Image 1 (cartoon, rainbow, N blue to C red):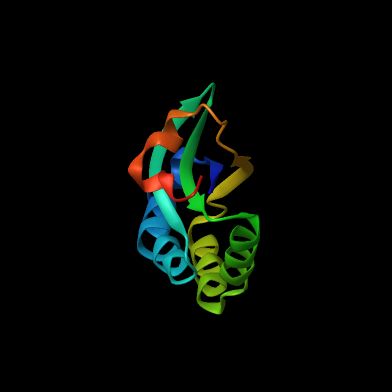
Image 2: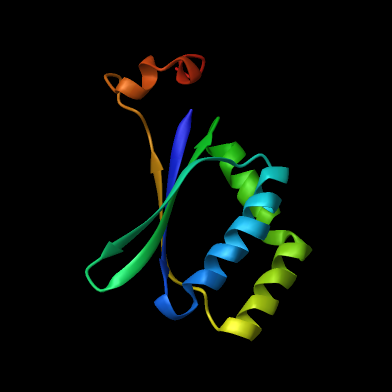
Length: 117
């Protein structure tokens, strides 16, 4: 099992539109491709607002295949184009990190992670 941490810079002036798009569309479409979103947060770092979410994957190949399928999804492309036309860019910088649990990580002791170790 691996985890993926995604950090999106979002903008205060269209933050509501971003959250509506992620909640109502991105998350739904992602689920059709096997995305397992464990948690989502909003945070502030210096003078920027960030949307942070954590995903779980069986391995990097599954992650890559799911992301490629999601990004190629025509419904998602249309939604992004429509929301950008109405609200401007909803996302600035994106950080993407793969997290590998250390052998002594408490996450490996959790029942839902035991089969992945």
